Image: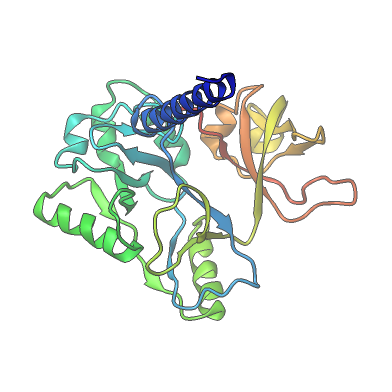
Length: 290
């Protein structure tokens, strides 16, 4: 065998081995509950996007929960301490949904799901299903499949996020105003008959009247008046180094037990000042780290 042929054959073997290993590790990370689930994520809607006859639902302020077929895990791939009865009758195929207790109850929800042996508290939580990733059909058929499953295998802690057809942009704005007036976070739009695509997809859009971002807590400041004996505001720093205070959006419980220094929070805002500081910044939540 010539030297050239030997090199060529060796190269082919190496490439086949590399491709095999890539496929193996892709499979391993996709199915292992110890790794992040491959989730479908939303882009942000803008006025130029046509959304007539798309599906429209409330964007819940809960915690993303992915059922692997055997275990309920977080978007970071960590298992929740869900009681066995909470996931009773769940199917052997994956589910995508949100752990939710109701509007403005995010902090209480996080407290429960981070606590071991909090079985009774889990009775307050509902698993709000919005997709079944591995059913090889369009959005409506995937949702119908899993709805039919739970009709035959009931679970009192499972609910489905209500979907309605978006007639036009006027209908969208009216619905958004309605949800936000009830202290809801916003809306999610899903393209009809769309596949489940991992990563950011323009087949799923989030709609909110505000922007949000993350920042690190640098310092706590004592409050005044009714907040004299607890936290009044916090100093935060964005990734670009800009620092500013946030003093609104906190519940009494959050003022009594403020976000720890060094933790990362999510805040909402409405544009920027000339100096790049977010306008009307308001606390939303501590970032999920589970």
